[in-house]
Image 1 (cartoon, rainbow, N blue to C red):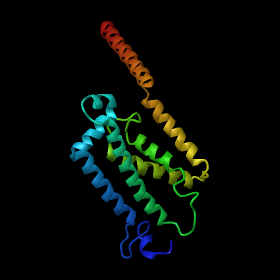
Image 2: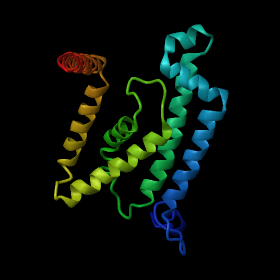
Image 3: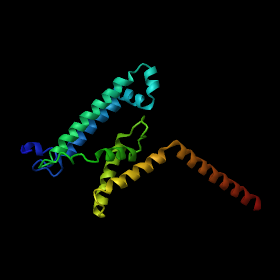
Length: 194
């Protein structure tokens, strides 16, 4: 793309040391956060995410709300596509956005959001995205090839999904209960011995 003002979306505005993409991100995140936290539609989206059937029974059109969520996601993806395409100086349609889907899932998971849906934490997702970028930069600095980096990220996703599984949580709770019971027995034994 040879139109110079278009390149400002992914690079710098002359005289400003902060990338334009940061400003775009701040504006989009602020708009989405206000939309999700301060409007009834944000509450509807969250209720459909928590329990689709209960939301439908209470009178919400789950399919319409899901469709609206896809529209919002498409709008955000379009904005991200404009920023990404403004950084390209030659035709590279095969690699633009490559492996971003893994990074987005991992950012949401690292942000503390349940992969099963429901309540979400936007600030946590943003922190997760920065963590993903830090992992990517660290892997590249360590000399890990760009083909192997998604494998490391996939392993992290698998570990997070395993940690969020109800069976794993029940196993951990059972182990903690056993350790607490053993501690109580030891304390009572020490008191009786003294």
